Image (cartoon, rainbow, N blue to C red; front, side, top):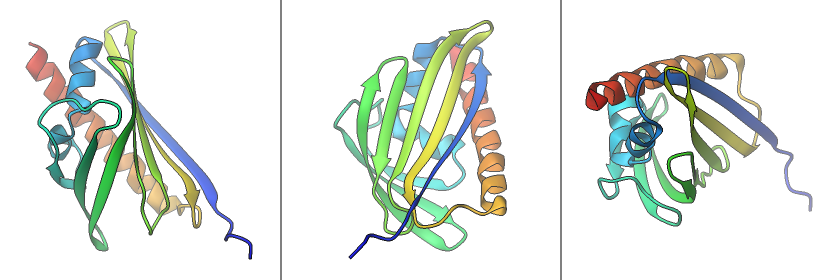
Length: 151
């Protein structure tokens, strides 16, 4: 029997933050910070520090359809440049989130990339617009929080 066809999806968003890459990296790779800047994230079970390759953490999301629990594993950590985490889900397949920090004029370019390598169906235009709006708010929150701490 053939497996059902899936669709790969990827979306990236970035912002320049007036702070050293290490400050940005350490903030975003500490899952305890996520509820401060990510609207859907409301509870994290993890150490209160940046997490390294192989470490696990649990997140609870509030989304339109209710609460979702995600078990994440850190797949890669190259401080202060690259961090990749992955969660397996029944509703959307694997979720892979990648953070990169790059030195640029004015500070650090932080990029957050979301991948769904095996979605059951492509996201709707409305879902993509919602992702983009939530990302804009989240990145602005990261920028404000990191810049405030870096002063």
